[in-house]
Image (cartoon, rainbow, N blue to C red; front, side, top):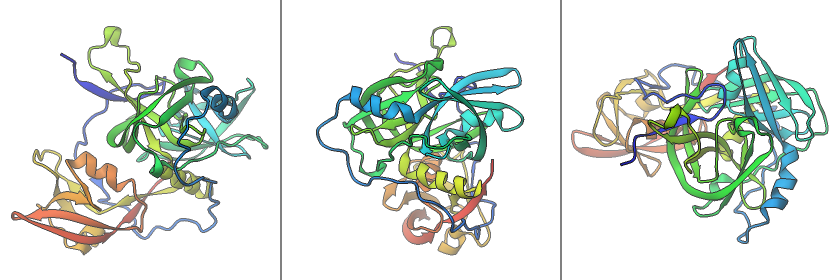
Length: 356
């Protein structure tokens, strides 16, 4: 019989099992009136699905590899590697927070480009809630990756992962999109993120973190961030078993744009604390933030949230994940039960700031 499946971050620096929600707060604090700079420069994105006929993987790899980087991490006695990709030609690179985080307090990040050249990177900003970070190197004229449309991705379509697993720069693996909207908790360095993930069977291993997941035209549809492994693996080693998870690019694009513009980014909240000991279907509310979105919508302590904007909510983790697939200020519908009665109410998402 198969053992328990654990989801782990896939950086080579910190690879650990993920804890439960542990009383996780969804916006129990934070300024709901925070605004984002109007000076945000939108990252180019191509909307719509990829072509029906798959392109040649070799041609895609040749085209995209110059945009993918390896990231070497030195933080005290710890060292390792991760991956990332160029999102603006003037040196901005998108990766995972758990890749950048070990160097946030005095460590050093070195970016290795496809041609073998290197540059020291600084951290522009991090969002621990989404496990995303933007780095900057002092270079111009870099080849930026083309961003696709993760909302148009379909199960069964081709998927290509590029990164530096175990420090092996420029590694290309291929598979398919295995599932969508998979609730995943991941992260590292004690910082837990919740991902409404794209699942793929393209091989992803430690060191792939932060690298791009591509569609069959070479457009970035996700950021490889976590893998599932079997408990009790021989020698404690963790590697690909065909269950990899990526942050959808539609979500990552918004966070990256905000980080580039301000060094800060916004996480949507509804203003409740969830009872993680609750074992029934849905997410039970144990506290309400006074004046928060949930209170304004009529939610009370003891209510059980069972739906969010038409999506069924199985538990606390899934609620956190689905909330974070939206942006602050968006209008949604929340469905909850109270005394056996189901109610659906409109709600406007608030925001909290995450500064790395």
